[in-house]
Image (cartoon, rainbow, N blue to C red):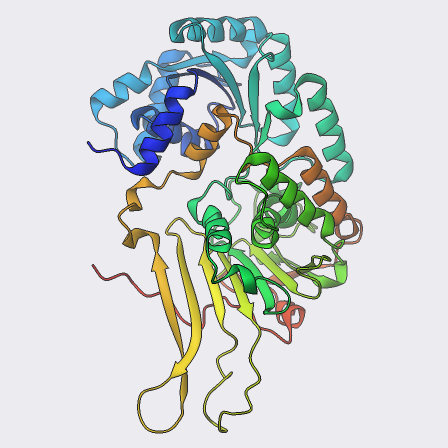
Length: 490
């Protein structure tokens, strides 16, 4: 098997990365089964990760054997790489389980045994795959088990529900862990395409000079989902689309799109530039927000018949700095919408069009766009006007498209959680959010949380409430696309 460049780079890092005991809180939960166990299995088998042992803990009363059985079922269902029997056996040996009711002492002992198997240089990483209200209890368990020193902790979103709760949560966390030990996860930023935004922006002389208010008309970050909320309604009732998606994911993507060039491609510099973007954001004006709830949401078990929880949100936000003053950023996300997409679309200002004859078609199809598709397929396209063949001057929209799977490295793509776990083991904070960044985003959100506009109903399979068109006028939403992605022809 030949190692690709990415693997070589990570393999080199793996040699430099100490062996790790991964303590997985919420080990029998949905996220662990769908993403974390398959992710860790792939890391173990790909020569990327250091040597690891996994100690799972959660409320369920399981032993090692039953836990391994559950993990096997999860991998069979959710892993994109089917493990051979031998691969599964070698991974299963690394899986251990301690029910949380056994207490901190039992957990400490299991971790000590796992560390002993890995040798004297073993490090610890704690992954909190638990609901927000259980996070501090897990931190206390780690403290009572004496597992804080020299360890790192990965926190799942959402991080707080408003400024006060985020400040409290950070303060409580900092009583036990230093900020440098804390990794607040955002799996959107772990995806190749999100990082590709940085590469396209800062790696090319073509785009960076026009990446500002003089050339850009508006920017859209649009993440519609077709999924409903049947399974997670009780969690969602306390959260809603804005807290669940906008604060944690869409604002992070916005920072990648809007930040200044960092002084170096290293965590501290990138974090500084992201925080500058957050500090320049104007507080969200409730007038610029449309909230929606899909018809039928109230019928789900666990949802109040009077529920005002939004399953959809669209908003306009502004960054009040030299580069972006006056450029609107439109964000939209929701459940049970017409399509599942993840796009960032940059619309360029239109040129003065006086030289073209009437009826030439110039401007008829909207402005030129650079569009990033952040779904796992990682595509981008640049649309522009060109002349239609034939007599006379007729213009048509054309597009250049690129897809990651057309390249030789298509198989190197690390799944988001794989990359993030690996980065946390290596102490790389680039793709994680800081306490200051999170608190600032809640501060910007406060006017909306204090005075949210009413929730409007929308039909399942639509693009949200009709008011979204007034919100974005005089522009239009890019989705549904004016042109579909081309299929790749092999």
